[in-house]
Structures are given as structure tokens and as C-alpha cells.
Length: 172
Image (cartoon, rainbow, N blue to C red; front, side, top):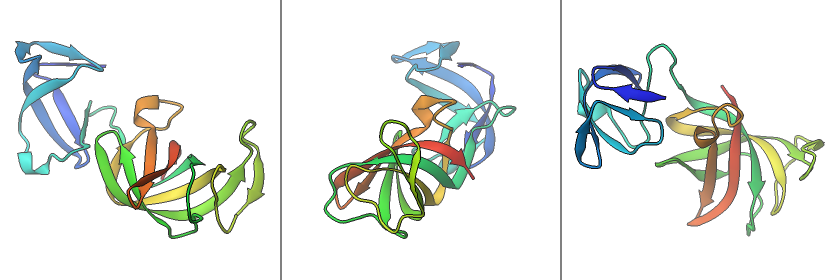
């Protein structure tokens, strides 16, 4: 993707449109920038209060999904206590740290094949691969990992430790 001065943008969340009035790359004004460039934008037509860390700008015709519930495949690291339904975590995604809850434990997966080895487990322990449903307190902008790797992966933290890494498999 790319952005040009004068482009209409959609900020997700909060699902508000604005216009790119100016683009700065390495403290120099430019007319356009490409995906992956770290730029500063001057925007018009939107209240700056509505822009938060983790806000993603996209084209209004192809908006990124913003949701509070999604399914993911996670790999659990070395944890002290098992993960159960309702387990509170901190979702680290791009620049976002958002409180979340493990809403459902869907299945335990085989590490190498990805085949379901157990449906509806009661708990998850260290070293397991699992399919879970997460719920965040506020909407987050996500993509499926298979479609856009950078916007489809995340880490889960609990009590100051990283307890799992995951990829988004379904946005609800």
C-alpha cells in the first residue's frame, strides 16, 4: 500500500474518515509514502482526541476489521498456572496493549500437523498449541494472519510475563 497527500483515510478504530494534508518521512516533507515507511501525518477532518495508539489508517473502500472478539491459534510458553476459560491476559499487538480475556478454549492442536487432538479442553498448559477465542475490552484493528502476517500476530502477557504467542484465524 501507499499514501499520498490529499488521500481520504479511514481510521480504525474509531471508524472515522479524514484527509492526509501532509506527510513527513525522516523529518522531510514528501508527497507519498509506501507500506512499511515510518511517517508522521498531518490530518484534517478528524478530532485528534479520537486517535489512539494502535489506530490503523486504511482506505475507506477497503477497511481493516475492528473487533472485540476473535479466534486465534496460540502457542503457550513456560507458564506457572494453567490457562482456563475466563483467564485475564494483556494482548500485545503492534503498538497496542489491550486487556483481554480467554473467552473459550476451543481445542488443543498437534504441534506439527495442526490436527485437533482434544476438543473443548478444560485447561491449557505449557508447550501446548491451542485454538482459543479472545475478547478485548475495546475494539482492536486486526487482519487474519493468512492474509496479512504483520497485522495478524500477537503476544499474550500475564503478571509481567509473556505466556503465549498467537495468530488470528477468525475475526468475529
